[in-house]
Length: 436
Image (cartoon, rainbow, N blue to C red):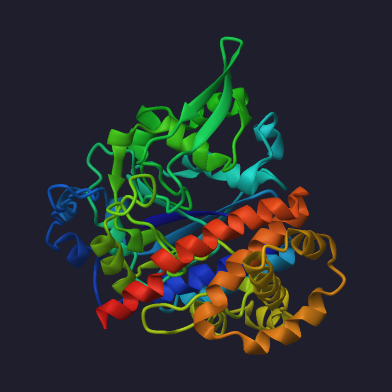
């Protein structure tokens, strides 16, 4: 069976149910896992960042790996009886479409005592839980998949499990952020900076070779690095990138972990060596065949954000899957009725754009400090075109971040100028129009 791991606390289980539903709903029960294993190998171009790979020989797999079905593992610190029952009911319903079961593993936060609460882990230790996944893998299981909760699957995941990982530790996707990342840590009583290379991957999607992961003591290495870490913006992601050697990463297409911010703008390898390591052609190919959306900003807080190659609002896909999610559907649709977060962000972005263009830094400062008029600003959104919505979301996030981190208007002004320049030059919609 195919083992898939997730981190989720009590509040996130209902959102995880949507992701699980998308996995099962996109599994073609008329096909067998063996058929996926028999598909042709993938051959990357000579100078491509992508790795070439073959599919595994089905006949040599263990009985456990050959068996059809999903085992969904949830790493959590607590789950109520009511939520557990609803989750089990969800899987019971989905099991009529394709075999699946759910296993819940309780983890004590004390196991991460001393780890930095930073980046995705600034509020709790939950993002670090994925480091403990190997503790719950059954014997004779050769590969496991880890997925972040804020994802939606559009493909049959058996296509992924059919890949032969050989002696790679993980198959992963290059992160679309800057490659000038560093991590500050203590070594021999001195403060040092670890500088990551261009192979830096996103840890929201990890296809793991169990034997190699254990052989190279990745969990232990991550724990040791975490204990010596002074500062890090991305918590577990930096740990894993520091612990896994670049030549042990099988680089998959961006389509397997399509970070939706890339639908706003993307800087590719042939435009800058310090950004996304796929060429523009490879990126545009991935946008035609998205296998997994990685929303980044929680899709349950948005009714609208970015548009895809078909001109569709990507948040509609998530809410359409909610309609098909057993047990949690009504609860989630009730939440949908009161969602205003994305409207507040867009209105803040709309207003900040006008202020940035006029160099009104003092007014940006006021916008950061004054939250009392946020709901009033929503009325101005009637003037926003769908094509422009993405840049307003991005600028609105800058205002929101400035509020949380006590940044001033000048900081937002500088970041805003840069974002506008990149958006105008590398707008994904501009490249999409060239395809049509």
